[in-house]
Length: 251
Image (cartoon, rainbow, N blue to C red; front, side, top):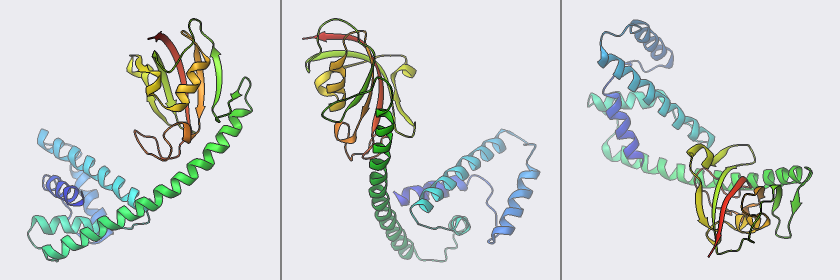
């Protein structure tokens, strides 16, 4: 993975200007001068090169910020120096040394990521409990024996829903911090499930309404995805769903 990223960076940097200075201040001055001289682009190729440079710079900054959060400090200007030396075929380290260094870095990132994930999972549990406590104080909230919380906004009508009911829903789901990880309304198309195939919080919660009903569910991790992390949902996340039950067909 690291080899792929570095090769990608080297390839992209080859297409546009690379500062020759090794010091941060001199690099900044050269970059500033270059940008000032390029305010008016001579042709489309220069615009493409500049756009590519901005995109790559943003990518590098984001990568460095993520690594800093993991406690890994890397030097941007050493990275630029390495790219320049690779292009000019003037490496200061052997290929074997580079390979060994990158293998160590990859392991360090993996180990730091595992530690950070564990910390995040613990914090998510804490924030989830705080969120559910506040939610429990809202008007119309019900809490079940399983720990599920819900507010029925519209009961609907028709047959009782079972595990074998085919449901058609519109919904949006978000984390305790308000981050929206899914939204069928935005996609403009409702979703069809068998109730038995969805998470436990849905399986229980949707039985409290009927066709045409609307419900808001707050689902603790053990009724959702537990400590798994997927699709923008970190491990041990408490999830909130707002669901419109458009149709329900019992088979």
